Image 1 (cartoon, helix red, strand yellow):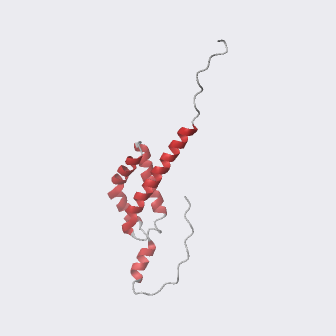
Image 2: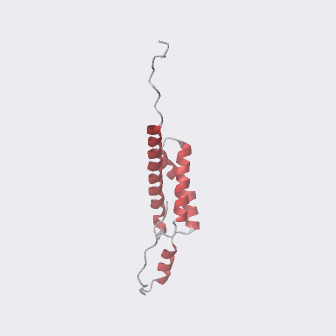
Image 3: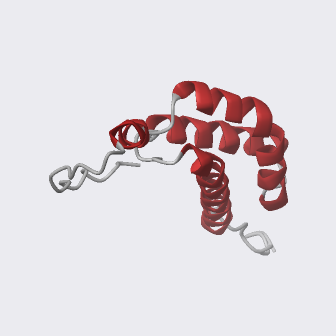
Length: 120
């Protein structure tokens, strides 16, 4: 997935909250994401299990969600929304996995009907 180019921000207006603005501009920290991983990995795995039937696929989806959130952590400005962002990513990745499975089943070659042999 390719992230869109960041939009240009308007000039910074001084409001007296520079320290909070700088903290939010930094995005979600790696430490916060690590804590979120430790605290919510199992619940995210359960969420994926609701949508997928394979444990290995669930683990892959959750790991991929953490990888994507880690790479996009600058865009998650409010650290409190990291878990919500992760949940939505898990749901989206699970739906994509299901779509790929269904497409794979549709594209499988169908067996030839039983035909009489040439000798008959």
